Amino acid sequence: MAYDQKAQEHYRRELDAIRSAGLFKEERIIHDPQAVEIDVEFPAGEPVRRVINLCANNYLGLSSHPKVVAAAHAGLDRRGYGMSSVRFICGTQDVHRELERKLSGFLGTEDTLLFPSCMDANAGVFEALFSEADVLIADRLVHASIVDGMRLSKAAQDTFKHSDMEHLEEKLAEHLDKRFRVVVTDGVFSMDGDLARLDEIVALAEKYDAMVFVDDSHATGFMGATGRGSHEQTGVVGRIDLITTTLGKALGGASGGCVSGRAELVEMCRQRARPYLFSNSVPPVIVSAALAVLDLIGGSTARRDKLEENTRYWRGLLAEAGFDVKPGASPIVPVMLYNARLAQDFARGLFARGIYVVGFFFPVVAKGQARIRTQLSAAHDKAHLDRAIEAFVSVGRELGVLGLDRRQLIERFGP
Amino acid sequence: MDELEKVILDYVRKEYLEEGDERELGVATPLITGGIVDSFSMVSLKRFLERKYVIRIPDAEATPAAFDSVRAIAELVEKLRGAPATA
Image 1 (cartoon, each protein chain N blue to C red):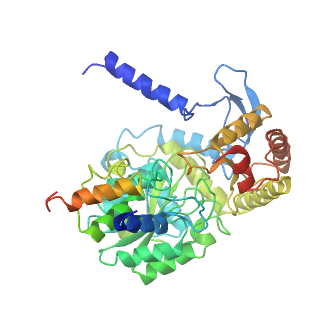
Image 2 (spheres, chains in turn purple, cyan):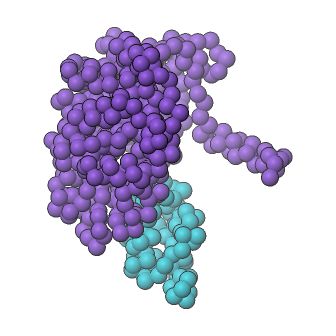
Image 3 (cartoon, chains in turn brown, orange):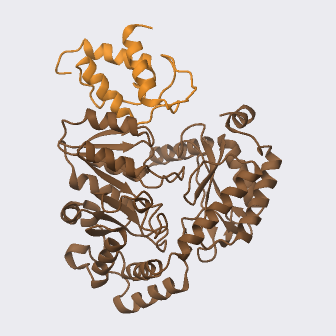
């Protein structure tokens, strides 16, 4: 069928519906390298503004670090631009295997397999490893890519209430008839910023003979004393069977992801995971830069320590100013507003004052849970955060949200 | 509210509401469109109904619309209980 008037009208109506529901996403155009201060054009066509960035996943401030950029240049010179192949035909270079070995060392796992992204890793891992005989039991707040990946698998699926160990135990007991039980969770949850109770999850998994899967994308590089991730933070290094994570956040921020864990499971992904089998190798330039990132953070905890200090400082500023902040220790710090319109107005007010954040609301988060998600970086200085809190207080005062708790915010602005 | 609706309502409360959740939940409360149950976690409700009432809910019938209230779910269960075993 040609793309006729009927089809065109259909998609125009759909787009109009997205706009009128207030869910239309517009890109902000950045005119310089990713950093904690950037030049942003928004809306398109408006003059560029210099803003403080509080919404990147650039946790360690390495996205544009000179050593990482230099390693990328060197990798480009030594190993070329593209592989023009998937890994198993003629797309595996020495640097790919070197990065997989180094990631295994860093994460404390037996083996690692690179994917074009962590979205791809999550899309491929469950389908490659589990069948109708098995059950995947996921925390209800896992990332959307895990939900999609689970749906691609033939395994039975179940969920447990967010971080509710009693509910998880009920589910594990309910599925004792299955061949393999797999507990599926994020390490740090992307919208709430809280840490999975991996020590308790691992204990339950051992009691009920289950495997544990963790997506550690928002933890690798900085959670735990040496930045290994949420498994280090909770004292269970070596006891997680499958970890997926990304090179697209703290580890340089370009793209690429991996499945890491038990040797046989990783090898099975190498044989069966479709996003690995049917998409091109991670480009050598990214692999080379990621190797430099691991060298940088393997030799020093200075960056994760600074990030931890920034997080503590920022949380303190928000609490002191009277904002309703989700508790936690990760550099994802959600400022709760509950009402979707309020979250959008708040983000707009901040942008006008030179602070770049994004408001999140249903369906990205649960209904009545709208918020501004702020994200810290090791590259922020206290001066950035002091300027940011001034803007937060100014907008908060203007909109009348300071000092209000959840109930009061909902009473005043609606759920 | 009949017995079937009561059983489903009790399950939904226990399975989906968090401790301290003050939302009113009745047989007509929108579950999916109201944000209480999402399509990801709906699976456990489907399995509960299938086990409890010894029915099979075909994927085509397990739609968000059919699961959007306890009353609608009860109607679906009633329909499938009366259907031949191959349904």
